[in-house]
Structures are given as structure tokens and as C-alpha cells.
Image 1 (cartoon, rainbow, N blue to C red):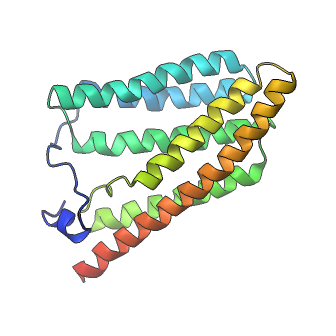
Image 2: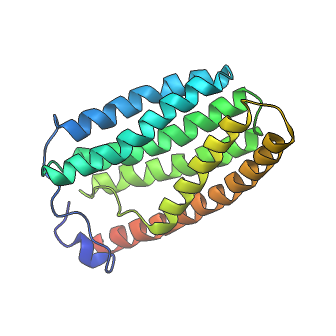
Length: 203
């Protein structure tokens, strides 16, 4: 990654502590999170929501744990900075896919989220060709990811029971998901502008 990267994109900085480490406890936790995603998706698609929620809760706890360990024991790594957002995006995409297979959400939500992630993957590959790592996470991206995750959890929870309260929760979760997708795309536009600015300055 260029040493002037943080200067090129304004006040937001890349983590200076990231090192070329691979086999660290945080990275192993991140890999286990990624491995758990297909398992969660299978349970959701089969509408075995209670089990899916338990695994999802463990995965969410591990997400915070790996960051704490990485900072506390100086194990922040470049690959870890890549694995963490990959795990988040895979969890969102696969969960939405499973919810679509289960008939809980409309397919257009999956298509819109998938298209955004595809465009981001192209941007990351192009930036990698110019020796840039992941772009710094924007608060809009964090908000969109959080909104989508809350929507997914609420949709899973609402499917466990069938009563007026859970029906209302389902509608609220769909609305939150739509807002989350909007923020998700807005963050994607911000990332693209940052990436294109880096590429333009390289030329």
C-alpha cells in the first residue's frame, strides 16, 4: 500500500499497525466466521431459525472478539483487514439469499445487494493492481451494514412464531432492510469516488 494513501483521500487514514501476519488468533476467528456462513444459510433456507440465530449470535460475538484480540496483542494484520469485511459481506449476501430461498423476502433485494457487492469486488481488484489495500470503512457503510444485519436478525426471529406481533416485526424488518440497502449503495458510491480519486492521482 502506498505510504501516501491516507493523504490522498483526506483525513481518513489506513491503520498504520497492520503487519504481514497470517496465522494469528484474530485471523483464525475470522476464517471460522466465514466457514460458519454457509451453515447459517442452510438453516435459514430450511427455516430452522432457532439454530440459525444461535450460530449467528456466536458469529457476531466472535466479530467483536477478533478485533479486541488483534488490538490488545498487537496482531492487526493486512489479511485480517481484508477478511473482516469479506466475512460481513458474505454473511449479508448469503443470509439474504437464504431468506429469498425460504420465501421470506423478495428476490429483488438479493439482486440489488449482490450487484453492489459485485461492483465493490471489481473496485477492490482494480485497486489491488495499483498496490492499494481495502479502502477505509466509511460510517455510512457501517450504518448500512448494521441496518441490514438488524433486518436479517429480525426477519429470522419473526419467522420463529406466527402472531400479529411477529407479523408487524416482519414488516418493520423489511422496511429496515430497504433503508439498509439504500445506505449500502450510498457507501458503495462513496467508496467508488475514493477509489477513482486514487487511480486518477496515480495517472
